[in-house]
Image (cartoon, rainbow, N blue to C red; front, side):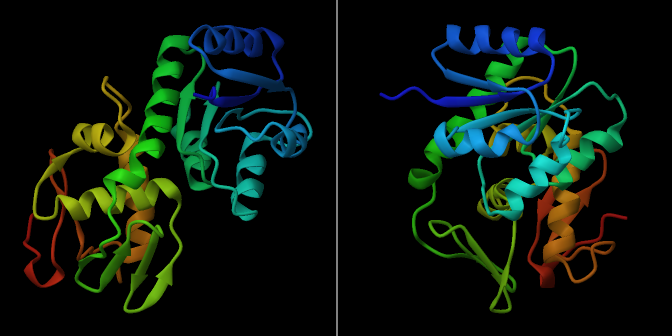
Length: 238
């Protein structure tokens, strides 16, 4: 089996060396670059399976790198590293296509767990998603093509938004806690930051709901989590 390739992008050599050392210990192939612009040359020859991307970088910061990659329709998974404690900085990374974020200082073991979870999720998607359309209300999902249409019109979702919508559809009518969604969509089997779920739910609502402030599909269950409901059967939880 070929080793999975991880591209590490951080301008602090001590951080890069720490990540590289620990990833190689568990069998990953690792390549390090130290500024944002170097990412685009590296992906041409290294072709990473996942990128660990620092937020604060010379030449081009992590948000700009993420935005440019997604603009090029490059869907390689990205874990954003940030020394910022402000939630808005983390949300900015997710807004621009990052799949996850971690705050410095971080545990190398937790980073490895998150990398493995994302790669495991990608690897199991084909077998977990037979080529049978999944529909609810006006939404139709083609799992194998990873396409979503509403009223026949294609909707552009990030990979994680797609995974989240498909998971909700497969558990329609069930109340799912944020931790259950972390386990089911992100494959995190430890106490993760559930705000990741809330951010992605918000983005998904913006794209599939007629009125994101008064959602018909993704209903918030106060103090619990979320539920995907048929629009005509939506219940009131006020």
